[in-house]
Length: 331
Image (cartoon, rainbow, N blue to C red; front, side, top):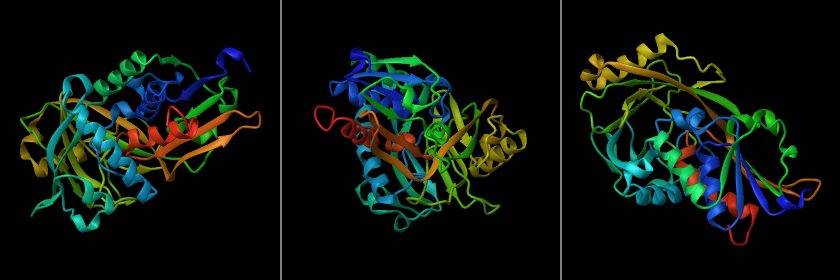
């Protein structure tokens, strides 16, 4: 191995999980590079609706702890929304009751049962701004981001490698247990809506879903409608199509999304459409967050399979992953 790289950590994957992990490692004293196939703006993270909520993620207990740890970080970042992209916004999970949630919910400030559902004031993250802020924070800590295509984790020339490749882990590890769950969004001009909303139980009986919202830990139940007020427009959703790989927005699906959201807030029906988005959530029956020793003695840490909750658990998972890389200063 190249002596120059003997104490370096390379994080493979430039989405929110990879960048957050790199920040934790760099601020813990490690030399860090991020190898990313796509830039932050082109990752799955960039198209996320990004409401903090444990959605489509397992195992339940660990996911709850990772989410709560991340919630504390986002609450602090919300003091600087223009810089970090994080705001605390009021909203309602329509049709949900507190007794359907896991133990983590009792530790979330302000969750309240109402006639409409569970109301809350939660972090809502403007992902393009947040990803840019993470890259800037990494740069200040001495880390770098490089555009690199990796064909195998064993080829990465570093003493420690952290695999944050999301759906890419399906071929890189390889791990066929990682599967895509496709989500589609419609972005419209905001007609004056300042609160977020989600509803459960899709009319066709299939799981729906947004990019970062959810209802029960590990639940396959999703949403039939949601809207999130972001600085660039009102984000409408959503879908959760298992094993669907297309990134091309479907006009019929888009029309259904708008109609479902307009049934909740009629003013959405006349809102001008600004754009369409589609992304693939990297779902796995359980997040893989573990350490592996390669035959040559190098450390490989896996941190992938976060489903629809990558933003929600990013900081909790990043800190645990950093501890697996080095139980000393970066833990």
